[in-house]
Image (cartoon, rainbow, N blue to C red; front, side, top):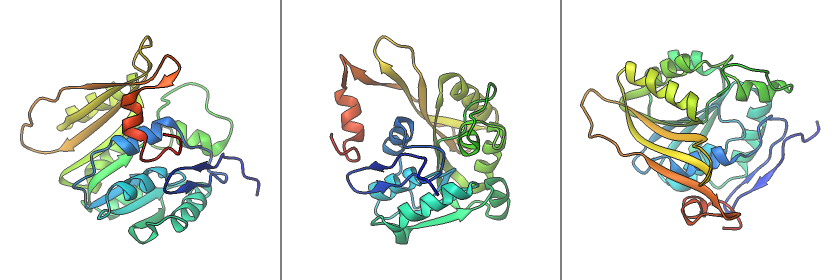
Length: 241
């Protein structure tokens, strides 16, 4: 089997891409570094792909127990290898399953969800089937993802996500209609002159009214170089920072 997805070396672990269809992305690294998991005990990584988010969370929190789930066989093969070669294999459980079915059979097990969801709601799908599954919502529509999150989380659980701006706003609106609360929001720009391209956001399940949240902003590059803010967020992971 040819290695069609690029490998990637981080400071404390490596990613073997295999035929997973989705290479390491800035989106994934941002989400893994930004998510608030300091007090998390049981986390599920929905659509783990090569296992990047699970490995980042395991590095950041030495007490966390992680379940990584994916429907794609090639992604599971890559994640299995990457977990086995990491320092945290004993804290990560890998599940080859459809999260829609898994959520029904494992209610309220987790206090934290992390997910880099499929985001294209329309348009031409990627030609490679694994990449299409990873990028398009056909296999996991956002409303169904919210249903899964409600089933999987404890009553005060939280989820962290990253999506393009328009899709993120739609996702947040749908969540708030279902009585989730937006507890963190970071608007991403690739450069200062460009519009926001991504939202990092955290949603929480709670009956109590939480204090109003102030959005933050992160600019990735300025004058052809990474900004101090981006470096501070990601330097525990990237080799050259």
